[in-house]
Image (cartoon, rainbow, N blue to C red):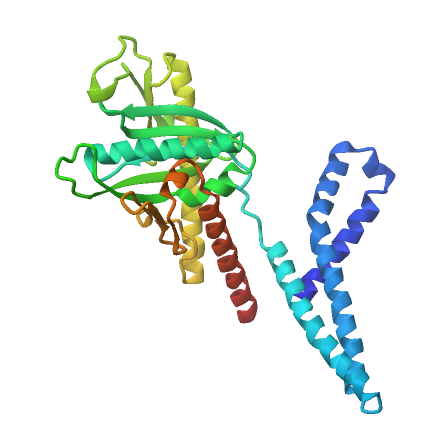
Length: 362
């Protein structure tokens, strides 16, 4: 690791020099590029220099500690100082390792949110609507913009499916942990016998794709138009404003009908399709990397149950990190930070462990 840090420090010093050169100062795009790179290295270099200072102080104190001709009390003080500095050095080294972890390139992206009712019929659809409202409240607390792209409602206020975009700084970095199967345990409003039922809802959080990342050939698309429908499938208008896009090579299908304009529905459907294609591409690349490493690390398998919401006990449990909170009402109101923070910490620890294992092998 020290060799890598030396290279980082050398590059940092080179950037400091480049940023004072006239040809760079006169080129705004180049100056911005170097400034951004320098800013990304500043914290790492600061940590490395602190670590070097600690290592030097350890050597100096160790020299006194090992000097048999020195005053015994002074040697004892030096030994105590060595212990303190070693602990401080271990903390500094860990902080540097965290800084060296590669950032998720999607963290600053907007999100395409998809919530679908799973097993449980009408009860699952009702819970899907509640989960969607939970995410809307979480987004609103952060002043993120939420735009509904498509909905499929049931007759009593449930949602078979809802697709929305969430726009805001760092949206994906927080919401990416929500993808998976969410299970609910409660007495449904339609249950007369008071029995607790278990239902499930699937959630997908996709990073929004940019045009340059996903190239779509128009000949690979089949675009169908139809009359939009309401709860129960009845037609709600007589114009062919709803749009269904099928990506023939992948078989992915996206429908949008919430807007009265066919053009707007088509644009929304393309936005969702691009996010799904990017997610498919990303998942395939991750699977290939996992295969190479002989282990599945953070595959985000959405078939797994990730969280249980138990209403009779006012309890929510995230099964990935073993976090249980007895304030389900607050969580459903959008208070998700404690769970998300625990998941982010666990992911960082796992990535750090993976890097340490790779370093030991090499």
